[in-house]
Length: 178
Image 1 (spheres, rainbow, N blue to C red):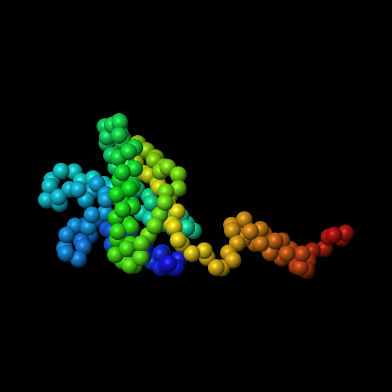
Image 2: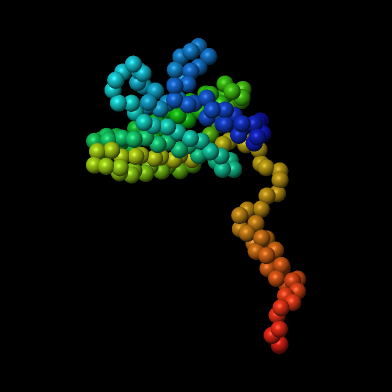
């Protein structure tokens, strides 16, 4: 079982190796599962503008996908399934490359459905962003006792309030009865 640090470093290395135009050991185009990889560089057609990012939040792996699409593509009946399929292809690449980099498997199970958001940039083009969440299986629990955000906030507020109790009055205060 890999440690949290090894998993984070492996995911970081996957991201470092997945830039546009990246090559594998044989000098071939690295198939990241994105639509932009389906085109030949020698073509003069408009390239697809899409990409992905990964982040860790505890034992949850967040896969973010963004793409520029035409409004015509949005109105196709299988639009959502195409986006979900792209997310699945990217996750397949991440798992495969993670195993190649670290030597251990990255086992994930989906948490809920992917969140797909569409934003219009003009009457012709739109931006599509999708986020899928995956729970990383076998990730060791963090042995450190780290307080959650509310506990840290409560502690810092109490510390700030204590500053007022222990402070002496300024020398220039002349009011009586306080």
